[in-house]
Image: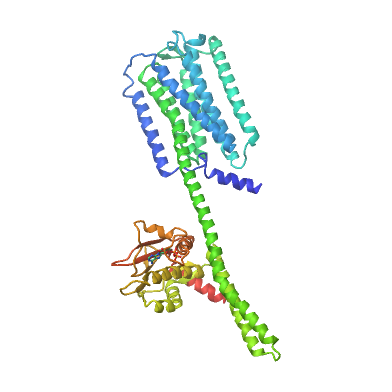
Length: 543
Ligand code: ADP
């Protein structure tokens, strides 16, 4: 049950119905509302005296695209419902389907469009009643969507019922729209007249327009109260357009082909398309994210496989030698004990050497485990300066062997970072060993320079050498697993180093040194002096 809730929560964080809108989306939505309001206001105000030519063919040109767009929106919303099982989305999808079919019925019933009196035996009044039906019904569907949204967060429609529910919805919508169209046309005489003629509303016109506007405003408020997602935001824009079309335009005059009429049809077309545009845009964006997530997952899996192989080989190589030494020590011990006069002292020495070799094996296993552990509990406040000095001390013999000098840039004050001491020492060891090995065959001066400084809240550590530098145009190749130029190399050092740095919240990169050589730099989030002092105090108290 808890697993289900967690899965639903995780899915919701990736779906349109739950993705929170960004500031840019909110600004864009406000701009769309503003422009539409200005357009509608202009049509109802300064431009209201403009008379446009009556062109019946314009009606299908405006209504058909709106109906098609709304039905495609319904299909996409039903598709989301079939994946997520959200009853709220199902309600909204049904609303869009209902509206698109109502629009078609309305267009057929309008006088003059396909027949002088309207198809299906309709007359002037039935067209207006059908328009009232879809405007009011759409607002009611949106109110239901807003009401169901919260209940939906933890509950889902069972998967087996989702396809039958969609089929039932389509049938119910078709039957309802046909029945409503028939009843509104057949009962035409019994319904109060909405208009007196093409240009003048009846006394109930204002109530009709008012009801549509009020329902639109109620839907807008319901969405406002529960607005959390991109879908909610754009639905609010749709409802703002519908409600303002109701208030500003429809309330003034019913006149078909008046400027208000064109403005209101245009606004409906824009509003009807908004959710489709948002759905298509967001689906494409999510598809892009999905693609990069799949590619990243594949790369990670491959890296893990090669890392696994390399670790096995490294562990085998590292422990083989002390294990062989242990066997030799133990057989020497046996020899000393099996002599006619056993030499206990020599046997003891052999056992001690065997124990020391056993400890070396243990240390190798521990260091490999430490490299791959992501346990943050092992992190503590570290002074980078002392870590650099410790690591250089370990490499003194290597530096001498290759005739290289080490230079540490003087640090003004201790630089503290939070990190795993063993892992970060391994990072410095890898980078410094690579630098020393790179300089092994160079003719000039061999200098390993290490520095650390604070840049924009991060500690930046540089390990530079005067070796041959990194060959090839793409310097990034050195971080790819299993790529090495050394006869004994594994090509895993830098891959592991980078993964340790990234696990610590930092970055690692390489660049050419001036005038020769290479520089490897990495960042680690700097720990504030106060935090470091608190940690030191806590450690002292525990000790
Ligand atoms: P390995 O040391 O086993 O080769 P790494 O991942 O540590 O694996 O390094 C990969 C390769 O990157 C090395 O083989 C070497 O060619 C190159 N490289 C690493 N560090 C340096 C450096 N400081 N200067 C020049 N080349 C380097």
